[in-house]
Image 1 (cartoon, rainbow, N blue to C red):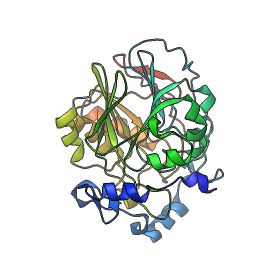
Image 2: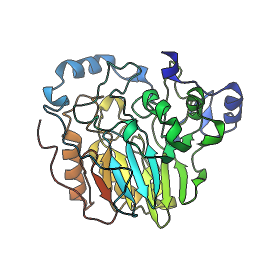
Image 3: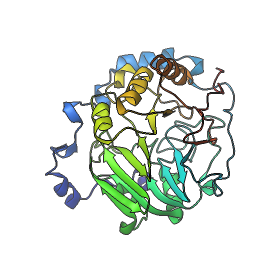
Image 4: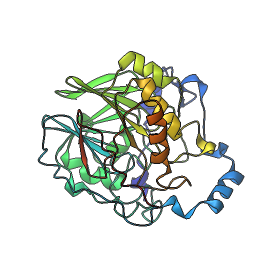
Length: 343
């Protein structure tokens, strides 16, 4: 069981972090002093949320999915295949970039908790092509899954993580030469044609009782003339506009949209804020993620997409909502078939 938790940064890494502006008293910090810990969430309210949760927190039938042949892309143009929640594959010019894969059927250190929805587990490690770059945004269980990442190792050329997160990968058998750690605003080119810059996010981290030992991040992904924003998890804040001004505009922003609750508003956007964040970034298109796979909050499972579409339409922001496994190629019309329109 201990291997599932991974391994926090070694003492020598912690000493290296000590001189960083976003690391204080042994923990990474959000910009602007924004803080959140699980212990700060009002337990009484969370219990009431649980007791009052609607039956629609999970879908009443399997989600519709598309089986795409990931080994033979139909185009050289940047194409995104979303696997539900925050897992997706970006393909371009023969390159494969996999982000936050969770294919084990659970977003938890134990397989019987936080189970994926029927249909949302349509893809496995076996379906993945060779991966040029595995990108991890932080080490929470719904983004970094031992049961997925460990068997992926033989398919992965290179891994990019925020500071400290590679310690988990080393514990799971990845070689040091496969791993690159970034602080916010650091850039790497792990393979030719792929440039990644880690940028701030307003969130937290941790797979054990000691949180914030590892960093969380969003990324700017430059693929030749195309620029994508990979949002990871983040509450709304001024960092979105700052990132847009420094690195934007973006051809597409993949932003979290779901599993929100006022009790953890500091570290997760509400749908209306997701639309505003995309606008702040200067995104030409929004692809909402972090929904349609796991129940981590007690809103109806399809409420996030309904609300973000309403908010985005109000500000004239195009949104594409492909089915799980359905490819979307940049520059093509947004996908807006309402496949989620059932309880």
